[in-house]
Image 1 (cartoon, rainbow, N blue to C red):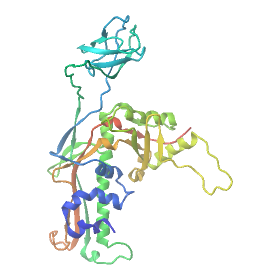
Image 2: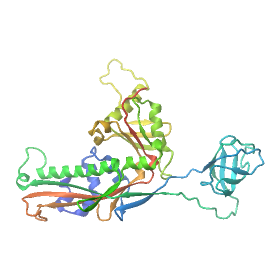
Image 3: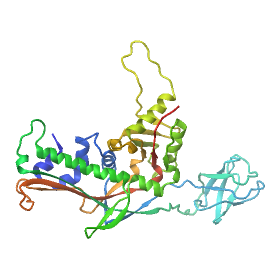
Image 4: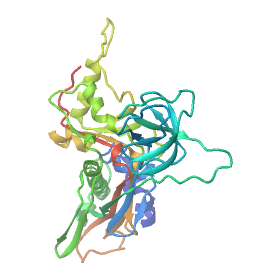
Length: 401
């Protein structure tokens, strides 16, 4: 049964389509050309955009720390001069990376100074060198203490535009009545192709889109930022890389390592989806194959290795070969590490996927044309609440040990 034979297409129930378009495409094309759009639609709840220009906030969990900018001479001094107190609050426990001593922040005296209670633990207070890092290891308060200050995460405000996606199908009525030799009816096949092209258009925009606004035919047209662009502009520079002529395991790990430095919320684990082109997948498999050993013994009827997952010291990446990436030689070499939980689709209110058909059952006419057809229209944008949890690798060409 094809997508167009579902309850929606039998009953022309537009509400059914709005609720299930992504689900239907996944069911009927589980290995289709829009895996990121489908997974984002199904794994996170789509939201509602209130305007063509959609604003949202991107924020990451804070891991409080500071670095000494002046040495602590002895175990008596209680004033520390540090690079920044922006993430610190009274009550925080800070552990010296040099000595292991834990101190309690008593007051945040200024933007670069704190007073501390020394030796809150088993390691005695002592001298601490300049440039020593102090990492927060929790907080501690006395009995009947006053309510502490709240810790706030300063979010980054991000703006993105909605984008209108439209795809149509059409057949002369004469052609629509011709019975095909095999397969579905021609109008059913045309509908299905239209649905595939529509989901593919949204998929490519989610990955490669760039925000813009301009007049077209006297009307305002907007486009949205996709994943690659939000990572390029909003994540640290190390999250976007171009591979060299050859890539080994250490180099691959270094390029994907930054995605684990921040998390969008405490529930996010250290697993990432890795969308790859066929060339990038071969490079990563070659790295795995050449980094180890395998033997072919007498009696085997198959040989070779195929890796679906690879692990680093900090997390795992589950590879999915993206059909669209294989459409050209440049994208074949692309690998995109994705934190799906950080992405959310936002549809302009009342503009989630709508289907209007013409010449079908006499419901709509198309200016008297002796033909049947229909148009799918969606207006949406994408939120990426944690750009730093994604990575982009261009140009994976050859894998070596």
